[in-house]
Amino acid sequence: MNDRTSSGRSASGPLRRLLSGRTRSLPSPSLPGTPLVEARGLCVRLGGRTVLDGVDLSVGAGEVVALVGPNGAGKSTLLAALAHDLPVEAGEVRVDGRPAADWSAGELALRRAVLPQSAQLSFPFAVEEVVRMGRAPWAGTAGEDEDEEAVREAMDLTEVAGFASRSFAALSGGERARVALARVLAQRTSLLLLDEPTAALDLRHQELVLRLCRERAAAGVAVVVVLHDLGLAGAYADRVAVLHGGRTAADGPPAEVFDPELLGRVYAHPVDVIEHPVSGDPLVTPVRERRGGREVREERDGQKEDQDPFMRRELERLERSDGHERLNDRVSRNFAP
Image 1 (tube, rainbow, N blue to C red):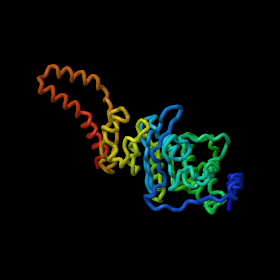
Image 2: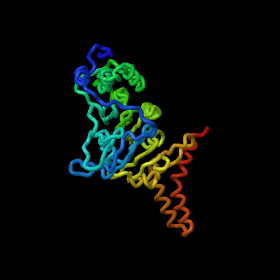
Image 3: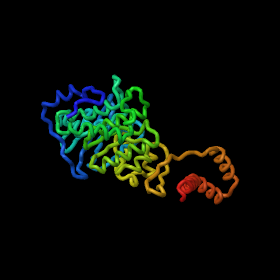
Image 4: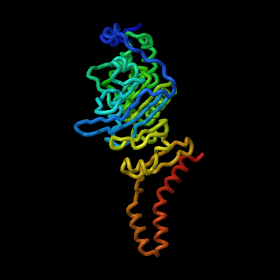
């Protein structure tokens, strides 16, 4: 077994020595659909405020579930609770069929990998060394033999192999985010908990990350991902859980959950939901006032005052439908063969 990085440094040597003599329960493959993480009646209070209030969630092997909702809805708190990184006031979290509290820290790390919103390191580790940290839980187990392959594959998948020797501290925000994701992938767990993995990424790498989520799910992994981009959630998630005020407002396939009335209420802003003309995925767009909208409304208001009741109703109908017609025209032009 290789216990060193390409630079010759020991890869988590002290941790390997600490764990090598311990007996840990190793994970077994799960059948598709087997619940790998569950929240039952979850309640969490932070700073005297109830952040989660009776949340239920179950995610099975081979499934991608997106957590969406406005700021402060409880998405990151729920993810941290699922990871058993946050104490709960009431309810239960189960990981791989057992209460999360029943697993030791080492056993839990073999079953779930967590990507926080931001990754900060105090020492000048090289990129490859950061990715290799994901292999630490496997120290002293048969899985240790996969270290080199796992690190190399994770760096290739996230497109960070080209700067493997650079200092993590010298990277851009987007590059750091991809390195942090590579570390999580290198851990090779059956459950991925990802908190806003696309926040610092450009369009191409956002798509890359969500494709990786789908590929991991196809391999039997359960993926829970916090997203703000409803378009990504609609295109890649099997299910979407909409959080609002610490509770689950909806949970189901994107085509069912993305209802204009529901989303408008949750986000406190009106939205349009249309079907992508090629993929069929739901597209969510905020209702916006077009340029010059105020002047147009004032002109129409003036016209309505001068018209009889029938014409006034017709003008109001046209005003309501105008935005939808312009949206449909724009979609037709963009996706015309």
